Image (tube, rainbow, N blue to C red; front, top):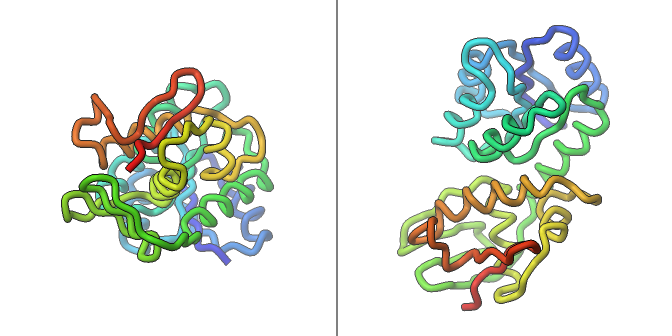
Length: 224
């Protein structure tokens, strides 16, 4: 059973998803505003937050951004069809994945389980890349001796990239291995997560030396 915080202001959508996810065996707590959702998430720390983008008052993007300042809790965004800007901004704010409305409960359940699987996998061994040290057993990343705080998705991406140092990995491979998307998913998930990861581990995110872009293909992590 997964403890889910659902933040959705539309009564019919909220009730439908709450019932469907409960039938899937999850424990669902619903909130209707961004302020209520943020307060609950900080106080009770659910296992995952499912967050509508278009909320009254404090919108979903800002809730996501504020949570990310102090917490690595997994976040899935609910976004309206065709709202590409919301998707990009939400991913850059720290969301782990997104689902387009109208939401199929089975799809949302699969995405929830996939995000949580990424958080639970624990590869072993330790590797160093300059002053960046990755302890795979402890799931701990340090740079110049200081802890680097990563979300589960950012950590999974870093682990996958560093598992193949010097090798160019296509975006499709990263979507399958990091996001568990068994189809041609949205490459914006990869690009936004790379951008967030660079900001945390690169000396200069504007001129990255660790995570290198292979134009028109994907990304390569610098060889040690």
